[in-house]
Image (cartoon, rainbow, N blue to C red):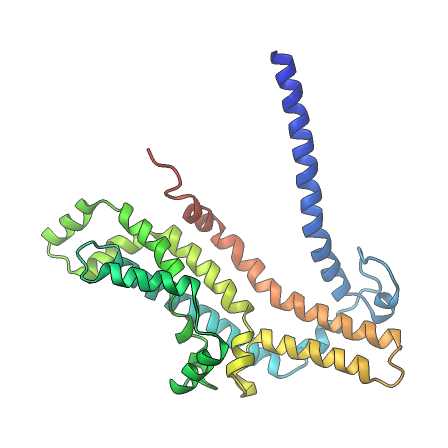
Length: 293
């Protein structure tokens, strides 16, 4: 029986490893293809087939992208809205979650019900646009920050963390003369760092990748983030390919494709750098509270 069990375990581990390897290749190969294609020459990209190694190594595609004077400003806007947006969103949700985690809060059930409704129903694109316009947020930097301040889903996550903190800690702090704000800032926030880091990561990635907010509410080009600039570059490259005299020019199409891939790499690199730094907190935030003893 032991030999049979060990043989079955061996088969399981073999097929499990095989599936994981194939799954990893499905993720790694496209990313690697984009990376090596972005440093390949136009003539190399004009050749058919999957690119697994640079064909005529060149940084010309990156030079074309970075030579655009608006790119550094767009990068700065993206960094600002990601940092400010993620920080304010996390702090705002933490404040709301702290209040809702207290059973003594008057009207708590009403607030909770209203919050749950926002998780399943929205006003729609046109009413939201009219609201943003009435608030005077059109063509302002704050349209990236204020509408994204609240997410009841994140509030629920933080509420669960706050409820797991022993009430004796709060009582001891009150006996020592701590105010409600001091209890929140010095006790609750430090004890929920994994959850806070998880929310910062999720919201930061969402802020960094967002371009629909710009497309809907921003017309001033100096407020464009990097994602919107990349969207413009890709659209302009596609239009140039279609309108170029002799649109079947393979070399020209390959050049526009190289520029598009270079912009994708430039956008992705910051997230790839930041994600590993927050990964340990992310895992802790997802696993904390999963096991009850």
